[in-house]
Image 1: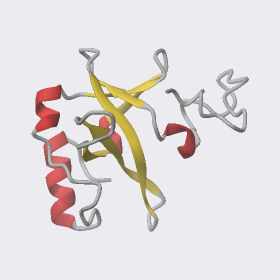
Image 2: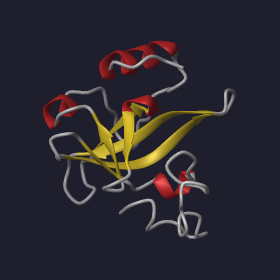
Image 3: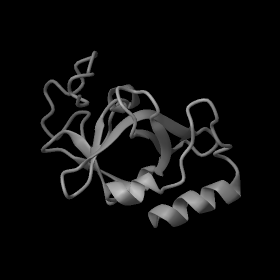
Image 4: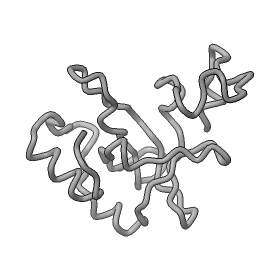
Length: 133
């Protein structure tokens, strides 16, 4: 499902490069968006967006990948800077293949990591080749 489908306020209805759109978007419309790679492989969908409350920046998108019908899904915190919006297909792109995502640092929905821990952050950014903001 795309961000346009979740637009309950109509902010994208008349998007013409002047109003809300690919440069400024509602967080609620992004949860549930599909994430693909450049090989057009489905890598899951965004389950949550993690905000750094102190800096006011988006830190991570939490992706769900694997499992079947939501059962045994593994969650992954992907640095927001690793995702690119694909406005044509109304989804996000991540430069990773399925095999590398399967071995990425992840967690269970009942055991979230301390995402503010600098050691954990370094591991995640190192894996995805991004720099902390």
